[in-house]
Structures are given as structure tokens and as C-alpha cells.
Length: 126
Image (cartoon, rainbow, N blue to C red; front, side, top):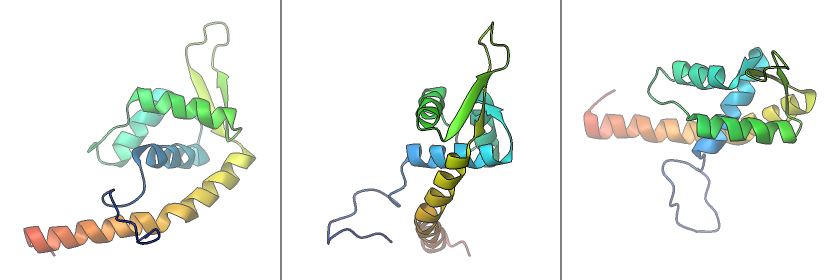
């Protein structure tokens, strides 16, 4: 678990925030195929067994941020209508994705350990 200079940990269970989680998942999905915003939201929800879903108010600002950082590239399906904007990951986006995947793996493992132990201790699950 990450400990910073003896400071108390105020965030539970790890230091991964929702925004970081969604950004990581967006980049992951874009390594598989091209998506548009609502499609990304729906796919994340599906992959977490519909237990949670990011809001459009989180997805779209992250897509703009990732695009302005050149980690993803967007285009309009029908440029004259500007209704559906599809996205793909760029080469620099793949490098960035690979870095943050490595950076956050231990935090996800810490979260899993905490949750497994709570389920075992409090709820008697094995």
C-alpha cells in the first residue's frame, strides 16, 4: 500500500480516484477498437457488471482532455451534422496507457486485498 511520509491515509481503499479509473478504462477500451462517448460509458458499465456507470459529465471532459493531450484522436462520423464523434488511441496514447497501467496495478491489488479481507472477516466469505 502506498504510504506517504508517515501521513495518514484519508482515502479508502486506495489512492485511485474515480477520474483516474475512468481515464484508464477509456484508454484500455480504445486499445481494442474505436468508440464514441456514450458507447464508452455503456461499455465500462457492462464490464463492471452494471454495478456502476460513469456519468456523461465525466466521460466527455476526459475525452476532451485526452484529445488535447494527443493521447486520443477524434473525428465526426458525419462532419456536417457533428452528432457522433468517434475516438481512437494514438501512439503516444498507447505509451501513456502502458505507463499508467503499470503505475496503478499495485493500488488495484491493494484494493482487492482489502475487499477480500473485509468480506472474509465481516461477512464470513471465503
